[in-house]
Image (cartoon, rainbow, N blue to C red; front, side, top):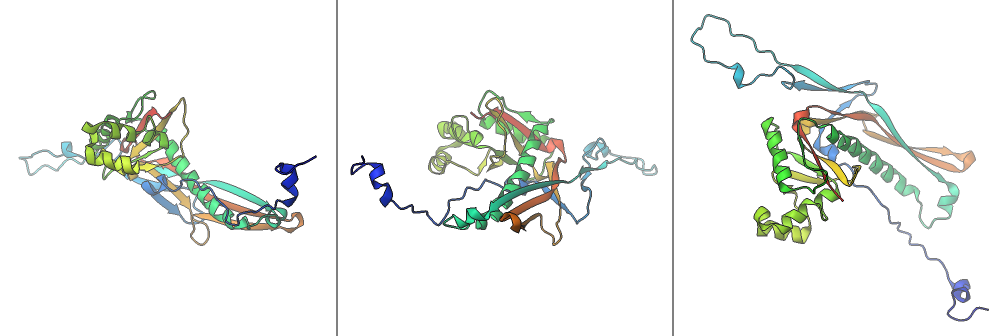
Length: 293
């Protein structure tokens, strides 16, 4: 027998109320993509290449220029490498299926979210492919997999890049464990006044983030795979890595289309990009392997 106060007693009087505005989770995406060299090919392109000049075995530099007193002898030619880094594009598809009964039993139409979620996932995949290239930086490596990241690690990385005349301000793309928490750089900054100074510490305390540190622009991405509690993040300039894609008809980078299967009471959303990533010049990047959890 049910009594007042029992759930079973009230169940018949309860009415489910579904919030019409759904809460949608999006991934952090499009982070690394905007920091690298980008090339696009027209429909039908089978490869996409980045030209590399003065980056091979034969380069021109100050050592090739000598003082002369003889003006009658021809100047010896300097050999300069002109190479290329070539991407062979691959298709990266994803599909979402929605049966009619799902839409008919929902307080809102889920279909309004699929296009945005597919585009977001494809953008995250590009970041994932690019971040995986950090493990391939072999000329310059810093950090210890059993120790959290330090400002010294970042300064050493900057030194590595400057030694190879890397242009511009490098970017550091890192996961949450490199930025926040016990092993994150923000923890070191806020706990060591000698490193950052009171003003920077105050900014970190209030915002838990500073966009530039040790001469590097800092970016957060979660498109990493942690192994043995450590992660390989990357410090690089745009000329180190490349992303290439073949345009769909109409000139778009990604394509999302809808396919209806009426006999199955099913609607399919299919998205894809046709592209790939490549390391262009190894000395322009640094692998930073440090503890993140």
